[in-house]
Length: 113
Image (cartoon, rainbow, N blue to C red; front, side):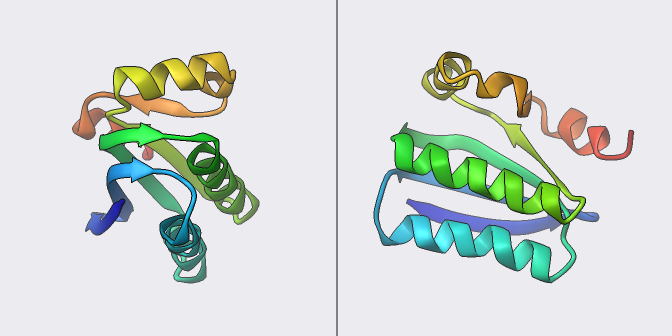
């Protein structure tokens, strides 16, 4: 898994690519969410368009990141969830927790509402 961060105005866009599965990369992803909070980057757009596979550990870290941000009065939104990941969100009922988008501009604008 690779993690790429970039600022889009006041929104931190985190793009993941590869397999989001258990291992040291998940520790890095968890730290990425914590660092966002530590630096007052409380609007996070998580781009999953490059993710080829996600297991329960990966899903757990994303939920943990969402919780970390929420506790700091921040928010995380999901961009470009693949069909498989979207189905995973539906099966786990996380679709009711995450705001998901397929259009980056629309997702970025949603933080302003």
